[in-house]
Length: 169
Image 1: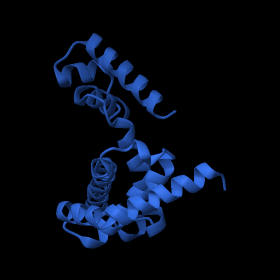
Image 2: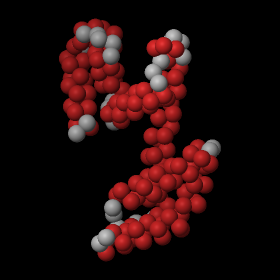
Image 3: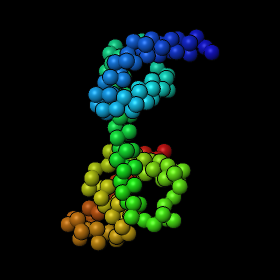
């Protein structure tokens, strides 16, 4: 291990010892669950390690940690919402059509990946993309449905494709 690695680990250890309890309580107040708070606090410190930055440049450690934890919390909540929507969608299906627990996990992961691709995409642009790709609607049909010009639909579709291709790199 290099001196930089050892120094980073010492800084993370100090940050962990000084602020872990505070972070768990901060997350618990927002999530209402100590188990999820503990998990997300651990994930936060894993992200800190992954960032490989020298923590001596962090002036406000709690702001730094809460920013990372907030992002993880948003992802956690979005995942739970996606899981719930998926479970509701398959609830009416016959048992033979429902995939195994492992299959559901793979499907949820795919949904999360797709969801992340849409982050930052304007709602009207996302609607055009989804109507085209999921509903199979033609551009003229989308134009009529949304009450926008055909040129707007084409422009939105191009923007959506650029956004998704950029995010997937």
